Figure 1 (tube, one colour):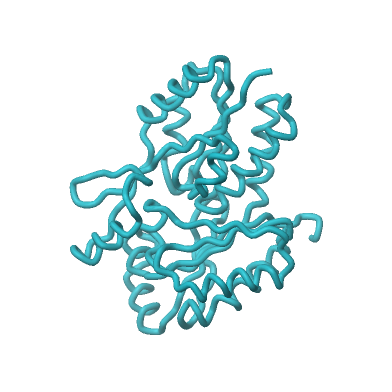
Figure 2: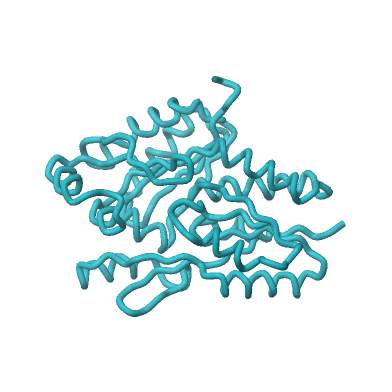
Length: 287
């Protein structure tokens, strides 16, 4: 039986304890501040926000490049002779990372790719489903694993409300007019991952603490989420009482397991401080 190893990007914001538990390999994406590029995870998230406070410039982000993927693929293969690598990739729509991984694996027959069409907690949820599949069915063929992983990707639902619109504006997710209007009227856009892309689907008025309950209940109800588990996402700067409120809402809604996801540097450069989000799987049988 060939050893199967899972690989994903740092943009999944995988909790470190779960990375260790399931032996998941994580390749870093990048945050660019000034003329320096930093591997996501190599610096504290607070440095991303400190950079903006000092310079009034929002850090940009960049994909993992083909050479980095190739180095990781070769290292894993050399350290685990005869292994199969299942790469569950950051959505191919907002980033070229997934395409770069395919380029890097050309000629390597032990690499298999699944486009998760998700980011942050949505990607993490799919990676953990992949780990569960591998642990329960270690003899499943790689192509069948990929099909199963992609079926979970089709059911994953993730959204977030940014903490500061200036970060979304810098990333081109909102226009100048929308940014000014949102700031003046205290409007917070709901950003959903739709077919792999980040899309603003509605707006909430008020501060995060005042809209969190309405947001969570509406989003959970909209997709009739599977109640086995939910991923609660936040970025550094969120107030503790808001996190506690989120967890209480999830419990009242009947979720059996709650997993917290803190946005890393790459995601935080788009969401800003104090963002919140949800990831779970849609219960298709309820339709």
